[in-house]
Structure formats: structure tokens, C-alpha cells
Image (cartoon, rainbow, N blue to C red; front, side):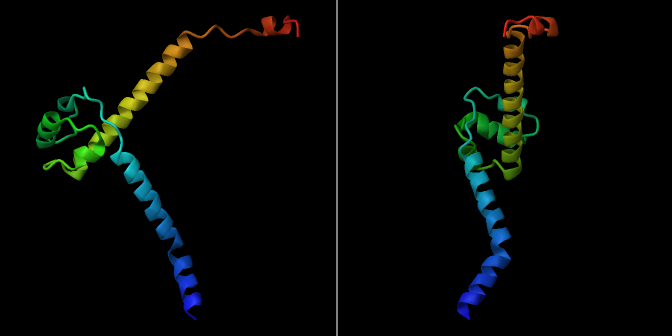
Length: 117
């Protein structure tokens, strides 16, 4: 009877447990996310003034360190994560555009048709 009950409980809560484990992994990843040393906290207008002051003074190396600074609230950590993600996307887009502008032109149909292969 105990085995059956245990299996029922496991089945009933498996989705919930899987979601919780996924959230834990995401949180661990976010906690270890590096913060650039030269980040200008004053330019992140979605941060509270208190958080800007504290973060600029302490200069945490990771989001986890930032989250443990007194006076930096969870909403500010979320704003910091959003800012870091947007900057990473901008950087990747700029790099991709630069790589595309330096690539040789694609051959046209005539060049492909006359190619000796």
C-alpha cells in the first residue's frame, strides 16, 4: 500500500517538482552571471536610486553578489538581469553585423552556373 501511495504522490507532483528543479537551475545560472566591472549603474534608470548608489559603491562581480547587498531589492536584481541581457543581445547583434559586412559577396546564379564542378 505504501509503494502504491508513494507512486501516486510522485506521479501527482512530478510536474511541480520538475518545474521547481528548472527554476533552481535558472536561479543558479543567474546568480553566477558576471557583471562587467565598468558597468555604469547610474545609466540603468530602472534601478532604484538606493540600488544604484550601493551597486556603484560595492561593484559586485556577479548577480549573486549584487543580490546579497543590503538595500538592493529583488526588483532591482531583475532590472539588472534585464539590462545585462539586453546589452548581451546588442553586443551579439553588433558582432554579427560586423562579421556580415566583412564577408565576401555571395556568388550570383551566373557564377554558380559557370562554375567547373
